[in-house]
Length: 231
Length: 272
Image (tube, rainbow over all chains, first blue to last red; front, top):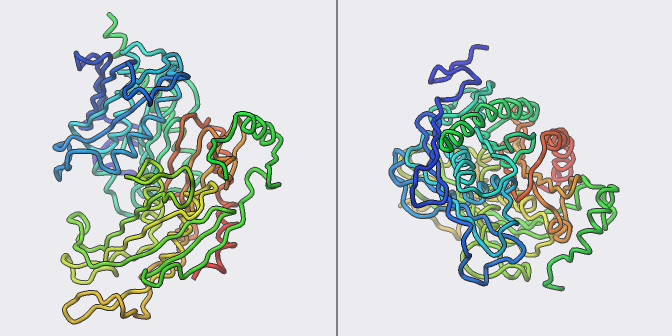
């Protein structure tokens, strides 16, 4: 089976990654993460007092994630402001990050995570998770681990790692499946699973394995960027 | 009926019960609840259905309108799935702009339907690149006793199967009062169904009641359909605040074919 990725990449080859922390001086923590032409910027503010006061929870802090595409990040200008898509993604990203954050240590507070995409070439939500996990660590929020995320694609019958826009629009045979996932970096627990397309149950198992392998590489990139900042 | 959340006492007891593989209503953890379909919710809708899973009830209505195609799909009709968690259905629902659940359920159902390939998009074109049918599906729970997503997805499928095309007059405007006998163009052999698995402690449940659902820590929804003799996963979304381990996901994946077969057999007679 000769797989031809439009970009010429191997099945398990991700686009070149960039990662850097401390990109928003005002934020308590911030980071940028990129897969090729997809760039995500994340900034963390908090823990800080949550207002209005009646939303405060004395038993825990609250993690609040906001994700959106910038208007000029895609070919057809995206109307500014929240959409059903961005609200849904914000919530699943919150769920993707929460399992590693010891948010219970900060009662009555909120930790705000802002994720924006200035340039999109698919896989934006997983790039956003990678940036946000680094930004949370940079902010010094206690965490049990990092979260690393990647999207697995299926082009007709072939699984590929780190889906780009051209692959997302693939139409031959069984078409394109996009399977973004996130996992706790040093454990086999998954914190985000989303999928669109057509994929056999057995192939999902294979895809999870491929995703876990890719997440190992991503984790090293995240860790290196955090260590560089600490120097 | 009480508006109270489920108490920690009840949650702890349920956790213990689940770890022994038991439930209050006598079902096993992965046993489906009773599912039924009725039609004719509204004769103004082009198609409608009411679906019950246990005590949960969701109604779905299809309205068809003439619209313009999206620039990125000029030769295809449009599908817009929305919904609202009416305060009629539960003391937990409130009026106002849709909360997260009111956004999540229609989006999950939309993806499951769209990706299954059930809609014959090209047959929804009235005049190429200019005029197409837009299918609006609206989902409303009438009674929430858990498993809303799975009930909503069956309601959506049933309403689509029920839908007939309204007549167009000479100018191409819709005459809603004149129903045709023509069915909405669907691939009738494609049956998209969703299964939401809920996790509590180390136990995994299907079709939970509201009380059970409330005690659960995390969930994952799979949309499935058959495509050329292969069972395909068309959509998936994990929700809530804790994780699924690789083993747990693999267990769920292994349960999918059996559950799909069971539910599609149950629905076979009830679907139009």
